[in-house]
Image 1 (spheres, one colour):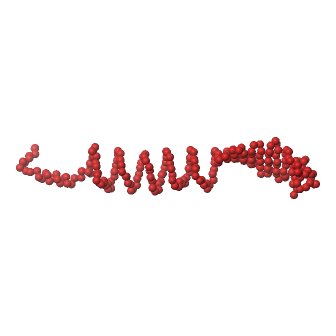
Image 2: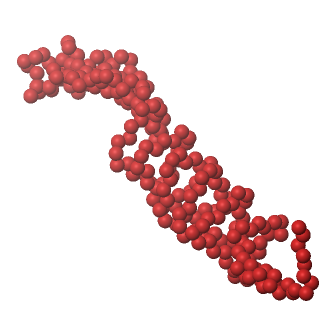
Image 3: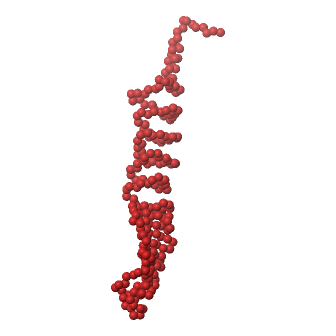
Length: 237
C-alpha cells in the first residue's frame, strides 16, 4: 500500500507543525560542539544552576578564576609563578618543598622539627627551655664544648681545657693544672712541683720560696711559719 499525495492539498499544516516543534525545542540539552568551538563574547556569561562542569581534557583560564566556595584538588597540582595565600592555611599530610622558602612574619612550630642539613641562624636567638646536645659538639667562637668526651670538656683556642670526670674537675693549660675532687684541691706546676690543699692543711712538693718566711718547730712558732721537715706552710689560728 502506497501513500497517495493529493496535489490539490497545501502543506501549511506541516509548516505549522514544524514551527511549533522549533519554538519548543531545547537543542542545547543534548548538544555537541565540534572543532569550531563555542564563543561567548560581549560580556556573556555561562551560568550553571544545580549542575556541574566536567572537564576531561584541559581547562585553560587566561584571565582570573574566582572561586567563592570550596576548592578540592585531587592529584598532582603544579603551580608556576607567585602564589599568594591570604588567610589561614591548613596543610594536612606530608608536605615536600623543593627550592628556597622565605617566611616573613612569625613561624610557629607546635610539634617536633627536624633538620638534617646545615642550620644557619643569623638573628637574635632566645632559648626559653633546655638545649640538649646528644651527639656532636658546641662551637662558640674560640670555645668548643664536647659533651661526648669524659663527662664533658671545654676547650679554648689557646690550648687551655676544662675537663669534667666522674669525681673531679680539672683546669689544664700546658703542663700546669688545677684539679678539684670535692675533698682536695691540687695545683700542679712544672718539674713535679705541686700544692695540695685539703681538710687538714696545705702541703707543698718541690721547691718553695721561703726567703721571708721564718722556720720554726711546732710549739714555738709564730702564727705563720714554714715547716722544713714536712715541707708545709703552717697557719696557727
